[in-house]
Length: 328
Image 1 (tube, one colour):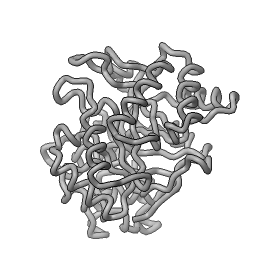
Image 2 (cartoon, helix red, strand yellow):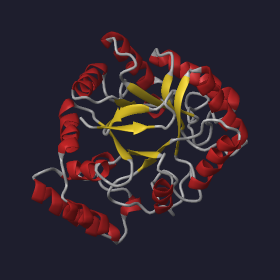
Image 3 (tube, one colour):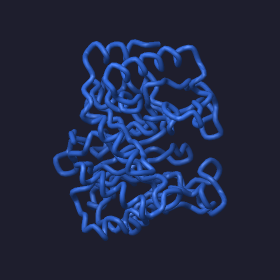
Image 4 (cartoon, one colour):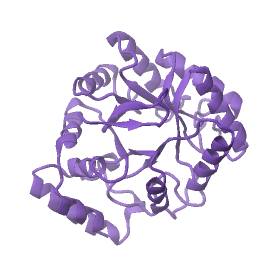
């Protein structure tokens, strides 16, 4: 396994594996035995960066979520695992009532919610401190100052380590970081967005993002990372839910544009040259790139995890990397 540092403050920064494990469906779609087997193998291979959220996976049974955090808590206790594994979770998108959704009834990012939701997550996970806590989605109904101060209070109390933001407009991330910096408070250092080798359109409105998708890592976000070297991008859904490899998993409509065939072609060429799978090429491209990107990949079986783990050791040549970067 290889590692990189996330965060800048010596009291909260962590060394994490360059491949993060997504636990979104653990305890719901993926049963406990399988989930434990995947987690055990990941740690055995040197992995130490696991991602979840307080609302995973509410959509499976119409609940408010918590399945994944609860399962991770049981696994951590049963294995006697402590500070050596970094567990990241998120708040802000938990439905306020069963049968509703974060699109119409989210918990939001008020100071009260931040404190209460973080406490619930610590209880479910069975930990004294949340290593990394994200603001999961935007909340334009709450002043940024309140959100920033709400997160900072938990860091000051020692119940939260690093702070992150997911699925926010870049300008709101920067504004929140500026508010924090002006007040001498900790701000967002880890950004989680959907990012893969194929590039989605970002101008397609959705129910949650009427101005276009904020989930994808746009050129603006990547430029922001270049300008702010202290930031790290955690790239969720790097393998597009299996669409690179499975005929029964078609690409989303966001990828129906002229750039997709060219980038798919070079991915397949490099996979043939290296003897690796397309999935492994995508992960290796992210892990070894110039920007600080940590792919966050889920796995519903140990076999899937093994394929992902092998990508950590896949070294792309400068020519291969240049071709992957340039395709459009």
